[in-house]
Image 1 (cartoon, rainbow, N blue to C red):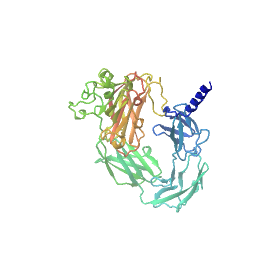
Image 2 (spheres, rainbow, N blue to C red; image 1 turned 120 degrees about the vertical axis):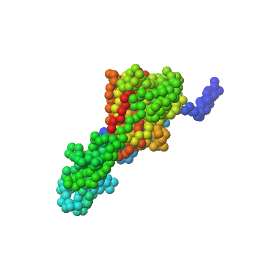
Image 3 (tube, rainbow, N blue to C red; image 1 turned 90 degrees about the vertical axis):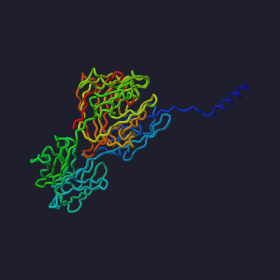
Image 4 (cartoon, rainbow, N blue to C red; image 1 turned 180 degrees about the vertical axis):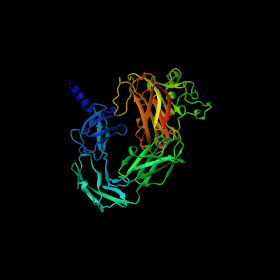
Length: 533
């Protein structure tokens, strides 16, 4: 008996020295939501493991109260202490753990509107935040010893005080120092008023197809405006009053109703002073090929239709502009076609395009059609598409006829950050249009189709807020339509001067098809697509 006990003790002792080689499971924790006092937006990027908080002006960025954090897994341990305020003047590193550690970054941005204007100002002011310097310009006849400040804002709205009071400032023969205080912060700014010989100047003329964007600088308290006419016309057309947007002495206008490919003349005026005449020419009104989806063929496969026809008498229809996910979905058979022409249900012409979401053996596939080309299938896990086609015009909206039927989401494999969608929610269709200057060497595609999306890599998914996007508009709906409806999608541009190199248009019966999420009952029809200028 003693010998048996000794053997048992020996076994236990040796067992305590055995190395545990069983690997821990890999569960990657994510931040899925965050409530922050004073936040106007919270952007969560799981791929970069980064949370960017946009704060309103009045919040003290040194004392940010994060009220709550939601994680993808309730077992998540975090080094973030929500019982204390956070100093977000610099990014904060936070470690999330379940079995392994993952470092996230929490950062804040706080845009503050600043301005400084004076009476009789010429053009717009210059605000140098880094050096705390503001400069306003007046004409050469202005007495710098008798200038009135008409507006001043150099700190957060409603909580900033100024010493001395800006209304008491008049002598700007030299720079004036002003103490700017908010929270318990005090800054010293230098205010300058400088004379300029230029009274009125045309700053920019950005001509599109049917509109021109005019910007000029003049004297703030004068009547400022523009005149334009078609080249060779006798009469000028005046643009003033409510059509003018003013910022101090800077003023601008959008002149609409112009004719494509037409020469015009324009000038700016400030009181009796007028600029020299500038000549500009409007651009062409170009439509995308096959926007009614009347042309199709079996040029690529007998399993499905492609929306071009090499035998067409029209050159633009002989090559591919539109593509779909049919190449991937029909790998296992033609019965899994997700995009097709429809002669039975259309709004214009002989056909519409029908997009039908369905479960293809082991993956959910959203019906879709897009400007670009399907690149390749990645086994049974996903596919790669290249978005975009060369295009340099700047339409102001995309219009189309649309019909939609949908159902509750019955296939769920994920969703974007900040999207609370779940199983059982009604599926959503999406149509979006984007114009940009994407470089294929940066975005992974080809010179013709520069933006590559790999459905296995979320970091490649199309981002409307990427630096290369110049104009963007989208239509999203979780409501079935009562027959065909006309949809107009305004395109919002970041710049009136940047010219795009490519256009992307994408339609999907299930908005989250890239995530393999949607309803197998969803069907989207589109017809009569038109770019409006």
